[in-house]
Image (tube, one colour):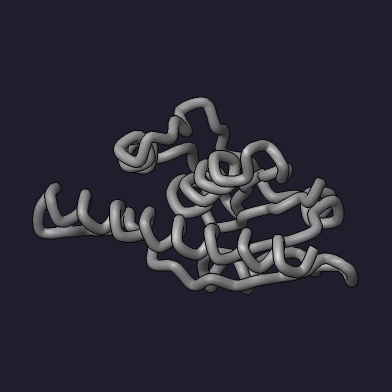
Length: 140
């Protein structure tokens, strides 16, 4: 079973949504985890946004990234430049992908604009994960 680790700074939005999608889309065929450089808890808007997509991430936890998590992964996917730049060294044999995805948890002129940004990031992650799984399937 392949092991995928999603990493972002706070392990609250992007990596949590990525973990939720990867679990749901893999049908249990991939071991998926997420972690953060400085975890701050799962963001309520990420939970709500994923619920709109039919995926419950409310039981996921916001975890501190450790070197052991990286060593045990087959794929490490960093989701922001901060995570990429502050991630411990990725050992030989572990594939690294970097997806620079905007943090949806920032100031917006309205709650509706913020909700749209969370949904945009969610949909972007879904598309990227679907593509990743297609590539993994093709490459064995």
